[in-house]
Image (cartoon, rainbow, N blue to C red; front, side):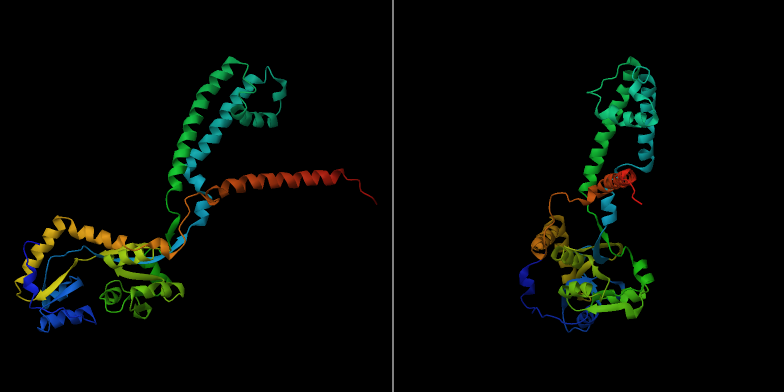
Length: 347
């Protein structure tokens, strides 16, 4: 930092402050302290008491909630690879192509008589074509382009489904602030933070729904025992929380922009401008962003819970298994009924 010399601080003593941030700001204003350093949010009403340096971190109020595993969506994941229109078009087009080929081939193949044989032919024409080649040239002319189309559609389906397998199947248990207020859920905030007042005055939460929590390490317990349904942090604190407790938590949709985080200096202090210049320099040289990345990387999230496996579980394919199993089960019931009818009845 070229604009400031560490000897400038030789006559100052670093004193820990326990209490509300606004009280610390007022202590700087009444000359109890020359300045205050830390994660101090730059707010309009605080300018009455102190001068701020430029912001060294951008920030906003972030809602953190528990993750919810969207198992139903995961089960029918393969259906989302195509839109509904595509799912309707594919079987319709295939039945039409198969019907045309069946009309042509049935003239030379008496085994294709009947609706049932036609439906089976529409399936076997793709999978068993190498065993039973078409005899009519017109049928081959119709089938050729359709096989190419199926190849393209299959490749597209595979690519779409593969990309979907790589995304997270978790979603926020509560999406936004409005849902929290409508459902009457309790929310948490840091005891000494301005956020608690912000939730009531600006976001219009019921004061009885605000739960003040002393330490970031107490939030998991508050979530687990149902004391709170969501927690509100400034974004740097949210990043630390999600880095430390990355299993089972995520950011909600709602966020609220703030002016940033800076240092507070006594009114008229020349040191404020000099510190600001150094902050700008550190930002331009990417030292502050690098420091932030190093701090977040220091949290070993994998030690907090069991890591997710890299292999695919059965959930993404469960929809297909349900369809195939249901068809087989219905046929089994039908065959059992047919079998029961063949058993002689004794009076």
